Image 1 (cartoon, rainbow, N blue to C red):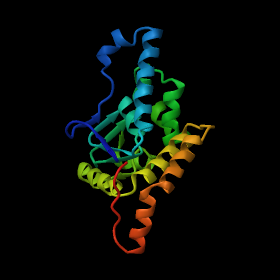
Image 2 (spheres, rainbow, N blue to C red; image 1 turned 45 degrees about the vertical axis):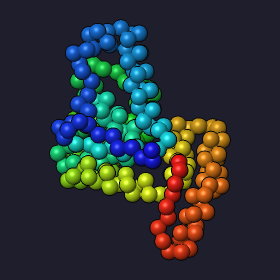
Image 3 (cartoon, rainbow, N blue to C red; image 1 turned 120 degrees about the horizontal axis):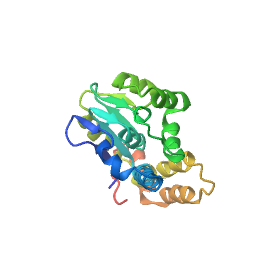
Image 4 (cartoon, rainbow, N blue to C red; image 1 turned 30 degrees about the vertical axis):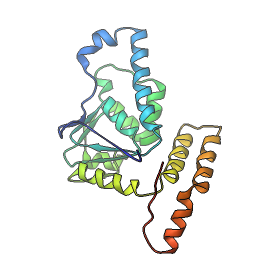
Length: 210
């Protein structure tokens, strides 16, 4: 696998948010809230730390935890009818520091504050202006599929190196050994030799393997 596109089933929503009716049984104590938040954090981190680029193709509603999930992706694209919201404050929900940090890293302090304080519904154009999405396109699934193939045509080891670097910098890692190893691996691979040869011969390279 060289790239992943994350999308909702159908066109009505990417993720509509948590099932509020389950909160009485799943978020009704300090322990259950901590467990719920930990599950959300681990899910979002697994997307963010995925070894290959992850593209969010957002159609329709992207609310609450769905917005957090989308912001865990490397790139996000939406349709003109997409809508975004962080409704925690109107339901009395608190976000823990780690989940807040993930959103803050992507939106910055002012946009994060407005989204959480107001619980406002943002249209696609507003979401793009705030950095929630990179672009608004009519056919988001076709756009993201084409983008995925464009990425997949490039050297996978070279793609993995900046992916590791972005994760390490975002999480303020002190030990950059794995990043340096990934960079060295790309230079030592046949991808590097084949890419240089293809460039010199003015043809498109063909990268095989991971």
